[in-house]
Length: 295
Image (cartoon, rainbow, N blue to C red):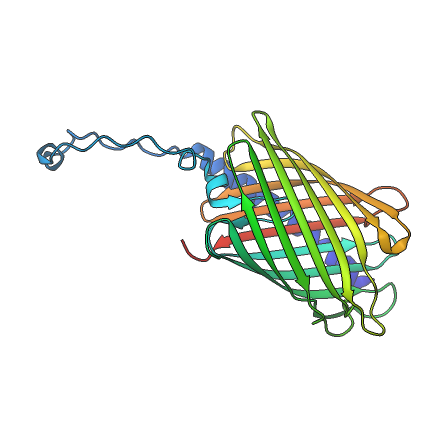
């Protein structure tokens, strides 16, 4: 429990540092207005140059905000319209006194167009039992296909993944799972409303492995963009799960996220708390940093 307490302290220190970084960087961005471009008559070279052809009116995609153009922040994930990498971390404390830490490298690359992506997740997991020492190892690697369509008023994304039985040292069950997701986002003047559908199902269950079957829903709103700090948004969410493998048991949690888009880097910080006796978890902290791998 001493190690668990130390991990909790480290998590809270990380929360404070990350929030301070996001806020400071966003304020700096808001205060640093770009310098106006020099007029054509400011230098002799410019005066001698031939007349410039009129610039065509930008398309709606070109006038989108930087956050929408470079990074797409789906609930629980961030990805770009090019190849990207993500460093993901979460700490989850459970009601039974156990805890779990996941550190994950996510890689994504576009396929035949900007909408279609192949995505790979490489997790490393640490388990904290109620008694005894923590144990850790490679988790179940996930590979998937994502197709997303964005517009000024409505976005939606479809994703399929397979979770392979690659876990070591007993950190996860060695069953093979398929996962399906459908995310929708409605964009309005005051903010956005998003809803994610997820279904996880065991398809291969070797002897000794657990069986998984559940539906999960996540409602996220209002995805509010701070006026004084461009690139910084806040949203609250309600996350629930219906456990088909446990007779339809219902579990849920409530939380909030801060998302910041800073140039070629996107960051998000999420806190959530379980609700009632059948909570998804007691407390969960998540941090997500996504960066472009190529233009």
